[in-house]
Length: 283
Image (cartoon, rainbow, N blue to C red; front, side, top):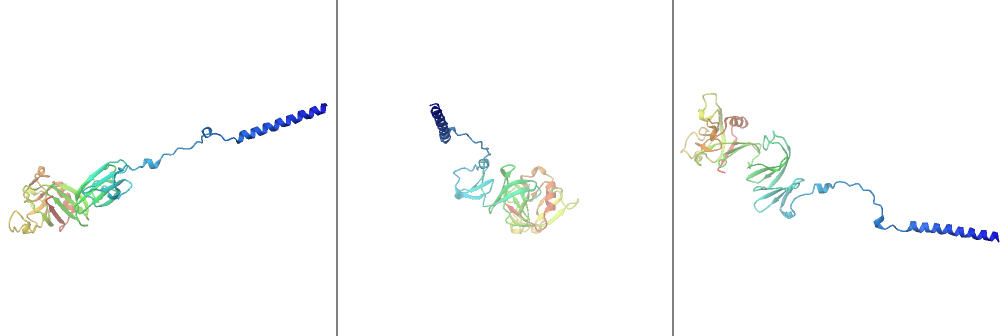
């Protein structure tokens, strides 16, 4: 009888042990709710695409874009051009566009715009005008000047603004303020050549001409101040020269010649040769 009781107790113990094992297995197999799952650590990286996100207005029409690089978009409007900075959203509107060229790492001693270093910029070129816009370090118009329409050395003089533009191999080298005729007809308009260059050593030039003279060969028919004045075609009547009236620079003040600051005319004198083309425009 005692042996039978022992066997029953052993059987009950075995059943209890197996029951506990099955319960543990069921608990382990039961799925964990999604909101109880442990959150794995994931490193957070800066969104580079968002940092470089373009700030070009969404309403910019794709069909108007004539140029785009990493920094700007150039969009053609009816008669003007918008240059949009993609990083800041700033817009510069210009009246001349056409062909667009990149400018990168331009040193101050290189044209265009000698004296100005340009880390990054663009040059907009059409048949009449060239506009240079700096992007870095500052987004702004650096210069707007006439298109010389040549790859050679040339001078263009704008009587309206009293500005002389010097081009070397087709690129703007420098610009200078000048004085032109006190009457619109006094300074002849057209395309001429430098006929001679004279450096004064005390006797060659009158005091009012400074100490440098670059004579312009002006045909009789373009000389508005006389009829067949023999001095005009040989470069002895109209010229680019210095002055003893520095306050007149930038004004319409001369008898027809182009006056310059004495230091600047000395610089120009070294940069141009006889036969250099000189174009004089009303505007």
